[in-house]
Image 1 (cartoon, rainbow, N blue to C red):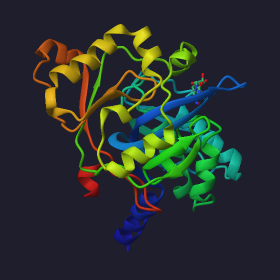
Image 2 (cartoon, helix red, strand yellow; image 1 turned 30 degrees about the vertical axis):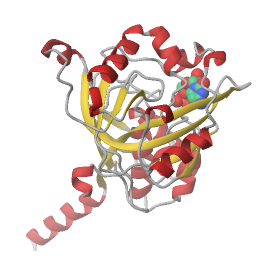
Image 3 (tube, rainbow, N blue to C red; image 1 turned 60 degrees about the horizontal axis):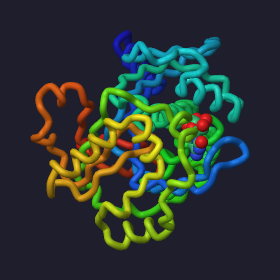
Length: 316
Ligand code: C5P
């Protein structure tokens, strides 16, 4: 009987823990529609969740706990209320009234200042986990709506994975995946990251693209393949102005990547360049250049309704 009670204890504690994959995203196109009175910008962007991500583990703390505990593999990430994971837990308690606290471990793989929404993915994964571990007091549409309070590109993670986003980015419409999920992607990021507020601030609205975002969406969806003229990102101009090496890197990937890539473009506010069509590291990079860059293959992913994202090699 001693054995049996031990087994029960193990099962009970397993129910209080959840290990989840925390994905990131790319913007297949990003149009800035206008500058708003509140300092934000209205966007029209095709987002796609990808399988470059972090590992997260959530354990609900026993009753009586009054604060969350965050253990992160990256010591440069703040542990206070400015951390998006803690912001997500505070938001969850405020909106649901559920006074649950958690220990969260976060194994980071997604670089920051990259335009990949790594921190936003962590926040979304945290909201999903807190909801699961507390008996689902909230619905998926509620989590989607609430997440807009703490960041513009968190809501998209509550889509099915491919979404046309407007407003600040938090108005999310599911779309069918525009490209086959097996499409190989190669992400290439220089050592320097870019700050989103700084990039929006230095955007010159007069130098934007004039492409109609709904035509970009239709173009991509109907063709079922990508072409460079559809991969417009209005934030490339301010990113390249701030970081001329990034323009050089993009041009180099286009020129020397030869016919390997169907399209090469920046995601979000940078500084990651997304290459579509091949995921092998370009030969033209010297070993030294290669060591300095963040280079990672990736795949587009979607999630099944009611489930969370999984790394594509596990999801297959
Ligand atoms: O919403 P989030 O906290 O991710 O945005 C960070 C900053 O990026 C905002 O404070 C704002 O300066 C800028 N931003 C913007 N328009 C958006 C999204 C972000 O100007 N649609």
